[in-house]
Image (tube, rainbow, N blue to C red):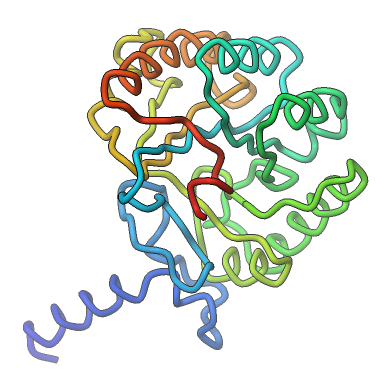
Length: 248
């Protein structure tokens, strides 16, 4: 195949993005939306989303990996102080242990999605594992009286199986357009800077209300960075809303 034809084919493959979910036989193939902001694509028929509309001065702040008995209440208090509504992606295995925290998230006016049951790498597992993980998460959320609209896979890893199984449950996969990477540094200012430089209408921000999969105390870094992000939002007249609101 000529070089230019190979180049055209690669561009076409990247452009297809989330639409690969419906391709027969593609269940094991990673989609190009792996790892969130690195390879962003636009939403495809409600299958996958990484940001909202730029037409309104709103952003969606999201939290992964909770609930955590110390971190989640502290994050909720800080959000109240900042006047921000957010979206939480709890691990169902943790939600089973702390159902009262999930209920408190809802009571405070935030939206609860799901982060699956385990925190496994989708790129290392086949469709059967993905289906079992999402089925387990769905059962837990139903037991808690919740029917999530939003699903975020662990590590932002998306395969065609991820998208297909999530959609079969009525869940829309959502990634992010800005993240703090608070596991990489204990400096809240550095975390905030990473987010603020990508802070624009429609942005979806990733932070964590747990340190289960990062260095001890990582959530404290996220919490401190959140106040700086809130200041930047105020300076840019950006409101913090839930993903339900961001997607309307």
